[in-house]
Image (cartoon, rainbow, N blue to C red; front, side, top):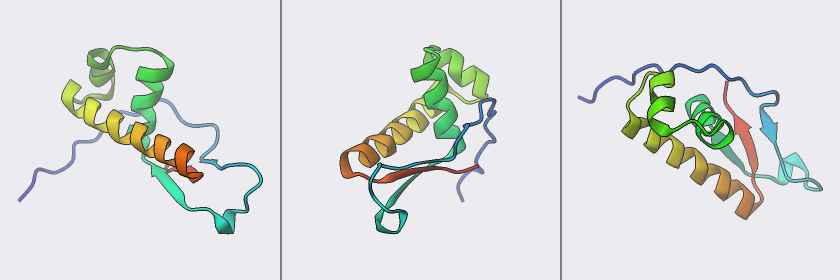
Length: 91
């Protein structure tokens, strides 16, 4: 039996929950779904330039957990950009 997932502290909220390439209809697009912890990790580390150790403390997770969440979020964003997918941010 695996450990239950620890709740992460999320402070930033996206202004928009959906981004898509222009000129392509929604019915023709695939989605990359970004979770709120991935959004928050990217916001803290990449946008606000907070060191991972401090960002982990803000989210109340370890630095290694933050690193995994950050890697997952960045991969989803890269996949969406390279393959022309929409990015949906789950709330």
